Length: 256
Image (cartoon, rainbow, N blue to C red; front, side, top):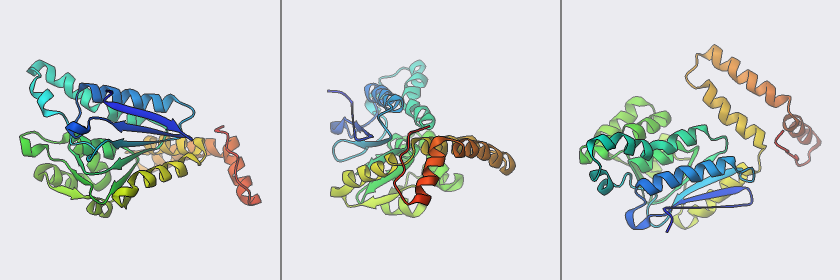
């Protein structure tokens, strides 16, 4: 049985962590297959948006601690690099990715969800940088949390291991929407469909632009954003979108 399942339909790619019996914890197989699935979605022109979910009751409760304990000291760094490789892939993706979260999203599970562009969570979803409770520490998941809520606030959660219910996550700003559990898949796919209907070029420019501007002084960020916006405004999609709006007709985007 594959550790990760994926499919595509109507412009939306779906990736499912498929170790429900182990609460979708990251082992070698899941980490490698997840990264492969994300790269496949990015390279597939038929995919416009991606939904990432977990099979069973929980999204993911982090790294498989039993596998971790089998590693010798000289193997730990390589093992952990594989556990986090999806973060590099997600950061480079030009397509929006939605984490569809139910149950627990803990440690590496929180890191994965918050590395995505959107988090849609069921009412029972709970997040947490909880590694401190087993003598470890959530540095990478904590970094992802800090990108959403700020460094000091994230550090408090990393050091305490306090859990964050979905409603609190929405209040803090990292959860985009909270939904009834039975409607989680439906609402996640509906958001993906909305994103898939946008100009592919506009969405790609948005993701690349935010990445390019991140951390720059205001003057340089405005200049970098201006260059990308000018290129978009000069494109066929840019002109088509404005012309369609003024003519009060649907736009026919072509991704050029």
